[in-house]
Length: 191
Image 1 (cartoon, rainbow, N blue to C red):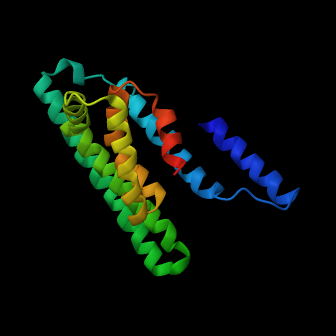
Image 2 (tube, rainbow, N blue to C red):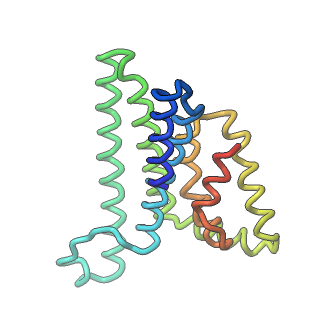
Image 3 (cartoon, one colour):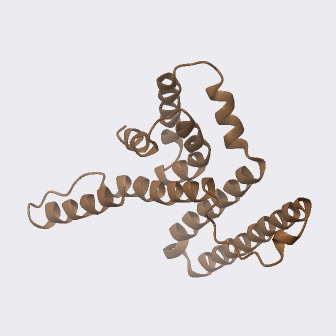
């Protein structure tokens, strides 16, 4: 995905300055690809339990204390990112319209992070993936339904928030169906 993003940017620059014909939709495609790079990386890290952890004392405690510690860490992260979002909103109000777009993007990102923590704690995506694969529908039908879901969502919101909010749910479902997630994201961008 990074190579496609890089090639698209280079082709757009060459098209704009050499042929005076930029590639239409480069910004929107780049937004979706960046969100895909970010959240596929997070999902892969979460699935492989690849987060960096310093465990000096935690393994010596019971599983219950370890779970409580993880919950407290998630809550503290939620509070910290909420405070960062609040401060960003305050700065945006003081500085005016120049920062308004950045503040909205940061608010969406923080909301998506909170939503991601909720999904991780509840393990809702894996439960939902198990339920959907257990329906007995052919995987291609489920994939088409997922892609059709993006049509009304795309009419209601911008591409980046839509991907940020739906990818943590859709990614495990697509993966459990046996599809390549990168190809699914690419087919979703060709609407």
